[in-house]
Length: 116
Length: 109
Picture (tube, each protein chain N blue to C red):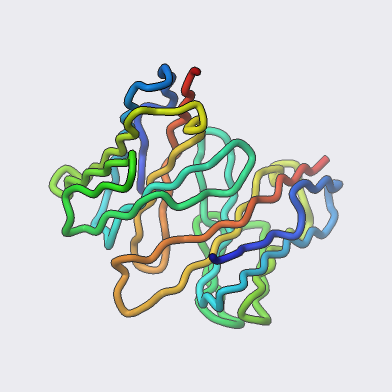
């Protein structure tokens, strides 16, 4: 089965720090996504990538950047962490074929980030 | 922007009862999917229904889709305490998936 691994389950950082969240998948998926999840707001897409070195903004990209240097790894970067970026961060990947009929996302376990 | 909206936000039932949660969305979709999330963990795919399907079953799960009303429902039959989790619908649109705010299900033993 597909495995999506996020480097940390819990992370505590200080305001202004640069933060790296790492995500690795082992099934050669082209597409990878970063979401943040906040109570009452569901999952909101930050960035996604459909190929190496390719990236697209999601709904809430402000304050974030991403890096996709290798197919299996998609990194989320908080350039200068702020308290309103305290959240659960979820990485996901998917294989996109010719037909969209049966494609499903595979998620990592999530990183709970606290910015103090 | 979010596509799916789940209803109810929270649901509490006794073990053995059925649980029904609903999802509404806004635009055309390739498919609609349901995911489950245990507290503090990632989401796990449960079931997918294509836009040209009306009903689908998987074990104790039954999903319906009404594209004319832009709505879907997830039925969990004979619930168990282990079904306690949050459930999200997700619509597959273009390159992106849009998730709703989820239904928190509590099954009381």
